[in-house]
Image (cartoon, rainbow, N blue to C red; front, side):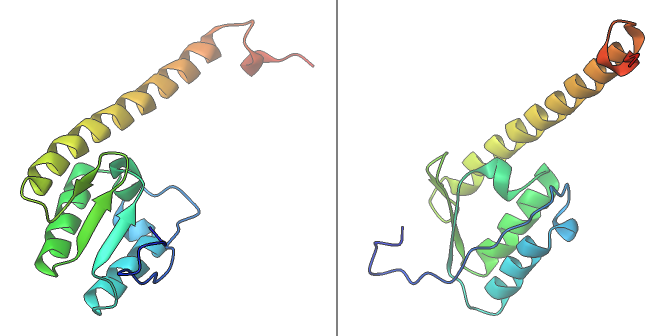
Length: 127
């Protein structure tokens, strides 16, 4: 990415804590503000799951970026937002990513509940 002479690197936007909504991600908010200000015309991101945590926020953000003519390239999925099928493919992937995230969360909660019922579990450590 940095080797392309047609591109100018603007910066890296990072959120330290995991946020389930866009409003709880200050780094992401800063990225969007720079897009609104016309400082960015392309976002390069690792994956859909890193860009958006839930389908609604994800799609609302993509539509706003599309209105601003800001392209988003998702490296793992090899999809550009502004490509012909970009929004359709991203919508499908986002739905799948959200379902996987919810399933993972439920599995963790189930495991924690189950471990509290097992007297041999570390949750009942008798040190």
